[in-house]
Image 1 (cartoon, helix red, strand yellow):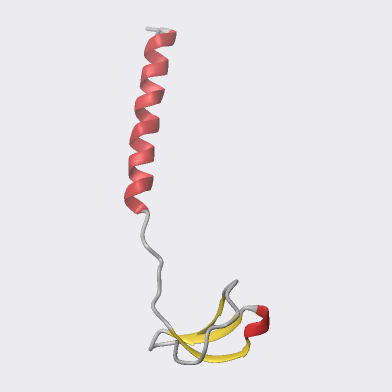
Image 2 (image 1 turned 180 degrees about the vertical axis):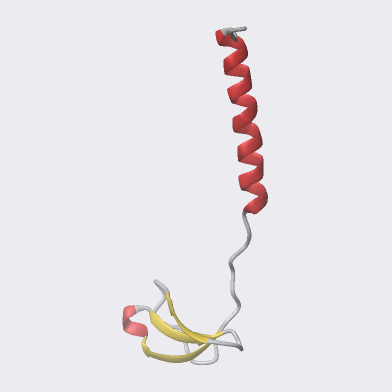
Length: 69
């Protein structure tokens, strides 16, 4: 039994809606609250920060952040 073009289009639209919903459900906020511990390379927008557990580099267009901000 062949599907009509309209039925196939409807089925593909339904699959797209389901896939989009699943992708949206997987999205999460990746915001991390940190404290600047070294701003010696701030002129390049590079800061060493900590989230309390690890230290890592963070980059910003803002070049005026200070240590402990």
